[in-house]
Image 1 (cartoon, one colour):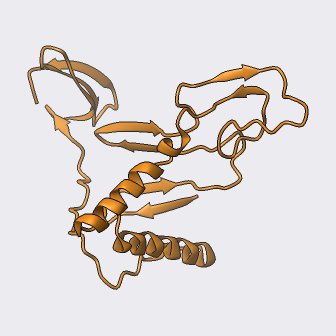
Image 2 (cartoon, helix red, strand yellow):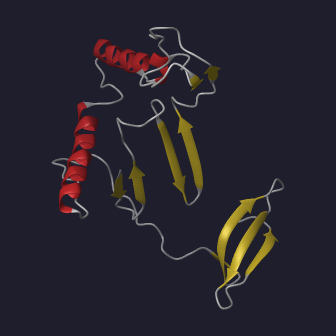
Length: 187
């Protein structure tokens, strides 16, 4: 498990394991100030089955890293596609034929490995370690605003857009600490 502190001040977390029990867990979760997205690429694709027993000798293939052939199982309908292999090879061979760079380049791998190197250094030193790049091709990111959003002298805890375009606000009074709901026109 690792934490990444971005230039903007945001924090990211990643968890990687080859010892996860119950099958391969391949998902992405991003939660931010303005929204959340979850993508489950492999384990919970909607295809679930239950079987009371396995054939003698076993040998049935369920999915990569499946531990058992009985009980609740989560087979993958098109495993190669779920893991991205056809798209990866199509892009790579297309790039070679068309003389263009692939979607993921050697440089992308260099950045990923530099992040992993910093994570290993951090595990040894038990402190934040910088990501050392010989060349950075990205831009810069502004710092995250530290002052909270306010409305009428109150701190905005949550802003919800209603179907008619008005906004429902959950506000906190800075002095008393009390919470109040307000419905207001637009932003």
